[in-house]
Image (cartoon, rainbow, N blue to C red; front, side, top):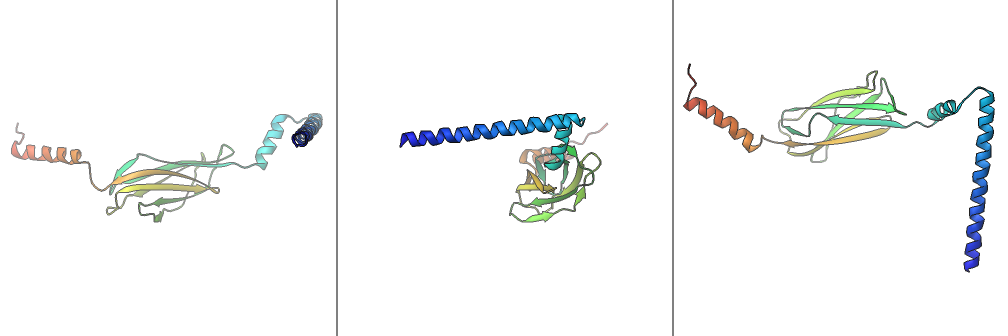
Length: 173
């Protein structure tokens, strides 16, 4: 039984080696013909880039934590084969902590493949994790942020103390 497995292994390895050799011979022949036509490997690469399309979308926000009523600044870029895409349609949405989606107006990219948008956090938004999604050219990227319903206790008290201090001890000149 071991001899049969070993024989099959060597037969498969031989067939693979033969196929690789044939592929190398074929590629060398194609290169020789392309060189006679004045083409180079660069031309082949450019041709392959037009055949294989690799879209890329990225989205980012200006900070990772917001308060109710603040505006989320959304930006990103769209490219295809590492080439910025001018005029690409970008669908944006925000997924709320309860799982529901809020669609934002679609936007398009500029000549450099960049896009921007804004989303005001509703005044009655629940605290929690929000997800911003950008979809273009069939590809999606996401980023997350959190929303607090009120300022940190320390922030609120500092403002409050300053106000009371100025009432109790008004500054006079």
